[in-house]
Image (tube, rainbow, N blue to C red; front, side):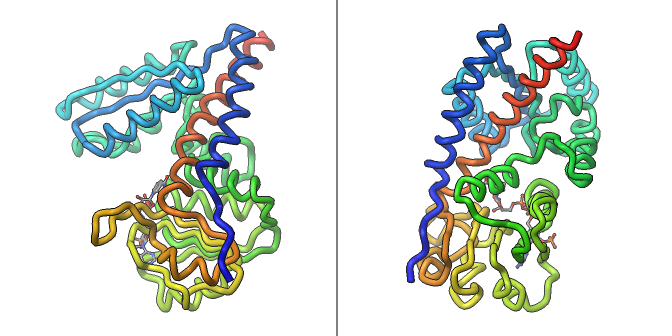
Length: 288
Ligand code: NAP
């Protein structure tokens, strides 16, 4: 058997087309969705991510502003800039690219962002709303996974979802979103004993670890849906996921590739959250 491919690029384009229509509608009502991106320090990967995010904004007609700071930036200056952006009516989303320089406390910075502009979904208010199953900004990678599965019409109710990884930005929120959708969720992490005993039980396996070659054919239940979040380099330096794609595609029912799987969905969900925030601001304005 050979698994069906879940094509992240195609699905991301589907959602981007929908967003374009919403943006056109918003612009007709004089609202241009605006995203402020803050980059502190000189991390090469961060610069690449920021460039990709801003390019995606410009392709959809979302206004984006970049605020770039030196590595030595005092924490208070960053706090002041975020507070200024919180009060800027043209900005609907504020994204602080992580990691921050070591002397800056990322929790303090994230808490400074207004929950109404928290398009990364990292603020404790957003997380609390997610846990209590209320509409909020959800972290972009987990939201992208949910939107992918929705597009593929994959039933979640009663399914056993096994998540590898418990980070605050991927593993934990992904588990919570599946739980909110009535799946039965198991989280595994670096201290999990006999990982394969769990992965083999998964109707849906989400691997968000960051280790090439972690998951092989013998770790998968026949027909399972396999979502590979990992972004690693193989021995030849090529981008790859956590899952041995060539082996696992012979066992799984559906599988995401790397690249071209979860990655394109993550950026699309940042755009989605920014547009959602702009829509909310319009509703608030109309109420006044
Ligand atoms: P992270 O913060 O490093 O978390 C990795 C998680 O994997 C931790 O919870 C860790 O457990 C767990 N882990 C480590 N070794 C394990 C093992 N042998 N078995 C089971 N679990 C194990 O990473 P992250 O930020 O969540 O990202 C995970 C991966 O996804 C990375 O490759 C990252 O580049 C990628 N990523 C991709 C996207 C995308 O858009 N495609 C977005 C974000 C991240 P402990 O908690 O016990 O340490």
